[in-house]
Length: 196
Image (cartoon, rainbow, N blue to C red; front, side, top):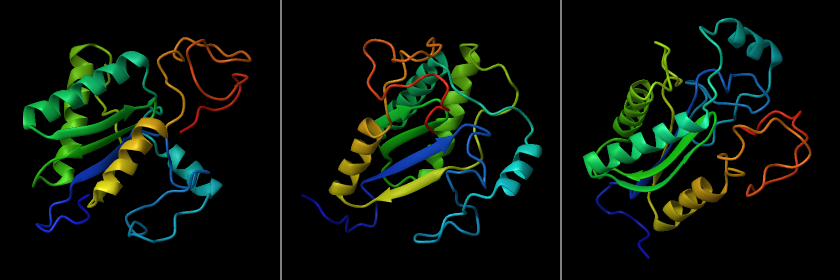
């Protein structure tokens, strides 16, 4: 097993980007910002006043992705990787965020992040699953450099298996005691907020 990339190019990146308005500074999930984003920095704690302020300055409603949009996004990211000869290792498109593990060679992860967002938005517009002139995405995203094979393995496992139940059956579900057949996950009475 390879434990170090001696030419200073990571084996892969874990790239995560969120939809607009679904994770605000000050909410219960905690967050980072441009001042508190270095490895080991403390996260911004829950602060209802800050969350309320951030909600007040939003330029639109929070974006939640439906099944058709998620399908468009996944196809677009696969297309980017194929077109640019990037090694797609794992992908999971959720209702409010996207995780991708990808090897881009000597390309910076910011290039991949921007390409994924642009291709995904373009495909949704072409398929008429996104009509707004606004971007469905927040600015920037999370870029984790994966230097070890073990790190790539754990990132792929997290993306593939650490995101909760499959979403394809949940788009038309209106609640009730049990999730639809063929779905995995805990029982839900339909009144709880979806997992972020």
